[in-house]
Image (cartoon, rainbow, N blue to C red; front, top):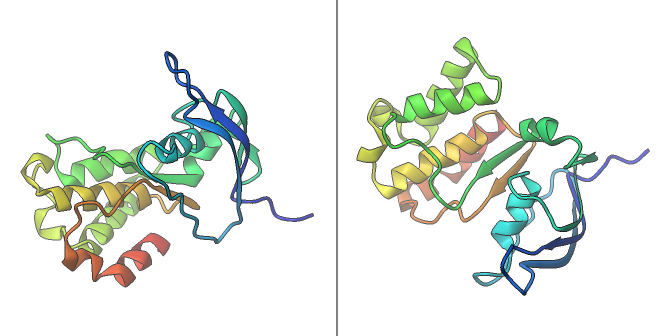
Length: 187
């Protein structure tokens, strides 16, 4: 029996209340495990809407979504543990430190104790934030906030990672460390 695709989308439709035009109309795609796949298009093309449906944040008006062979409507909780999400907007708490944010996010994915603390420290180091780990996020630059946001998406080592414009505002020195960042995601 063949391995199910990482993502299988069939005839996806999303119509927001109060709008006449659908945000998505008949989108179908298959992404095999181990593939890197990008959604490209102009602003308003439905990229973020598609990601939000795939992550279970939005419900489709019509169509079907399977993640690792599981129907997204029937297996929502199981799917949440398989995916990591780096949203377009910063999704961390400004009054918490980077370490506090990541410990909280890791606990939401069932990580605890020493394993979680070590993973947080490892990621902060790889992303060049270890010196700033105990500073509140509101004191960070935009690029530093983006790095913490990215760590939050890979902290639990997801099988599938959704990135919605993750490099917007990230400074050049971090982008030069891509090989170290990809190693942190794999570990």
